[in-house]
Image 1 (cartoon, rainbow, N blue to C red):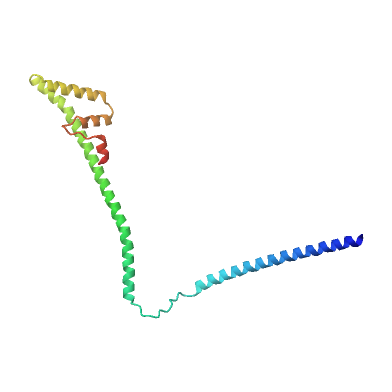
Image 2 (tube, rainbow, N blue to C red):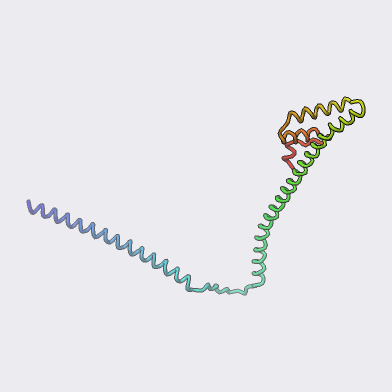
Amino acid sequence: MNFIFGIIILAMFILALRVLWATALQMFNALKHASQTFRSYQSKRQSRNRLPVIMSSIRHEVDWLALSDSVRQEIHSRNAGSNRQVDRLDEELQVKTKTMELIKADIQLAKLQLELEKVRPMAALDESKAGKPTKRSKKATSVMDHDLSKSSHPVRQLRTALKSGNGLVIQANELAHH
């Protein structure tokens, strides 16, 4: 019985040694491969820093002027593409500044029309004191008094001034399109 147990233990010991030996061989190969990779990377890096750039020899004659002209034209064409974009952006900026100027002019016009509407009732009152009142002057003063009393917000005043101007009506959506 001891003999059988001895053979089993000896077989297990041999199997364990083979497993350990195979594992050690695999680890050794992996380390060897990693060190070779590291060395090759390091040597490539050092050789890149040490060696100057050498042009390969050209067997035929090269026209260096034509080559430089073609390179110059390529550079100009690339720069022209970016210049076109800059020009487009400049045009957009000019359009937007003109739009802002138009909007400011519209606001100034609306303010002047509002002041004119404020002066009109006073002129109509002066006329009525001087002569007999007409239907038109009564109607204009009543409409203006009604509009001014109803709208106290500056935006509403601006809209009413724009709508009741001298036949000049600027819609709110037209202001947005300028």
